[in-house]
Length: 357
Image (cartoon, rainbow, N blue to C red; front, side, top):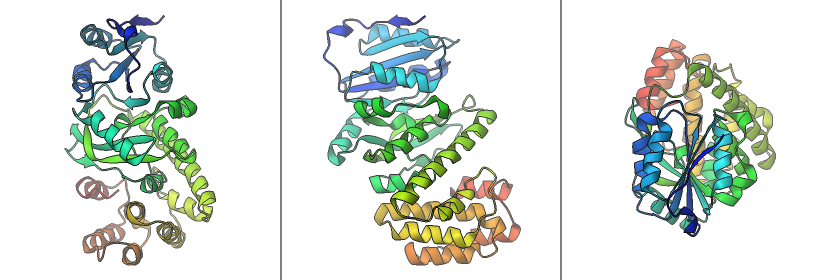
């Protein structure tokens, strides 16, 4: 049975501009800071919809304490139904024009909503994310997602181009597509891929607007394996769409995506080169830079099985890149000569310190 805690005088207010979607499952450790970061936003015309998805800790009590102090909070507690179902319930409850995602363990910077609304008005986009800064167990690095619609739709071929808890999207469009629980663990990537095919206009604010916490209670090894498998299926689905819409050779795109398998397969590097050349020819500006960046990452993943990998990358970079790239050539040669694949310690160290793949 649902347990609903109503805000004081909630029903008397006009519909807010933003509905904040915060699912919670056993999140009491960091929940107070997450809620506080939303209530402290410089843009105040929002409702915060919290659904406690069957928590067995004190998450509901923490949320209730905040709800009693702020009438903008709508709080529901019920049995666990999973993240996708919970998000869809919030979408159905949302009264705002925009739905802003928020996780129960992250921190939104105070100007996040204000900045995103400005950016959405400026760009005319349907969905907007932002850069994030990691903290907690992770190195305090900044994850910079692409800014333009073209670049984001190129990045989608290789992985998720939004940090999920930064997203603000049109409510009416979210209700049309919804989250799909068949893709649990990567339901956001599935939604963005379908949104791209539905021609949503996409953007990211090129600024850090959220602090993304990494901690030991996050995704398990078993879920990670499932996530990698489902993510690869979405890549291949989007590869099919790009091949048709851009009139590319699907077999070449499939060869590229072999290098994104959890255990990379030996790819035909002539086909990989050809695929990237075609993608680079079709794009300009940030979209081209995004394709080249992912090409570099995948060449690192394929280096162990390709003695000529450094020469191949150098030719690609000469034709479409930013110059010599001597450091990259040296690292590619090191991985090729030592036959170090993505599972090796050398590769992982390069990945960690050079952020290459």
